[in-house]
Length: 135
Ligand SMILES: [Zn+2]
Ligand SMILES: [Zn+2]
Figure 1 (cartoon, rainbow, N blue to C red):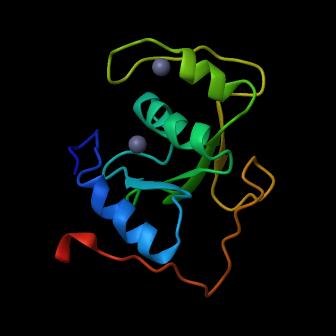
Figure 2: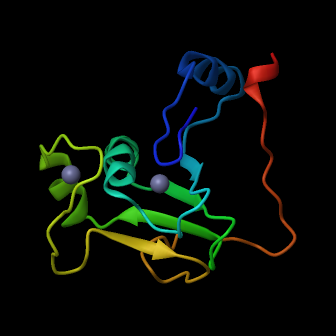
């Protein structure tokens, strides 16, 4: 569920049950930026840190249909991005993070050497999406 600039996950227990029955694991998360460009907001970085500290390979996919590029795959740098975000105690939904050597996160569209080298987007190979709300 989301607003123009935030999103939250609802009924996660259904996702866990679905995964459990099929032996699947969460590799990351995906959300849209309906009106903004394709980047990781401070809220996104905090959300993603929870995924990446559970699974180092975790990725965040951002779809920004009105922007170019319209799709990005992102990860926190580790070090220093993951620890910096985990240690950040700012409470505002959107807040600045310091510039650090190596950057807080990496990624983008198409570049396989930008920090998510274990992710490949192959021409003609789709992604299966299962809508859990209709069960
Ligand atoms: Zn976002
Ligand atoms: Zn922060």
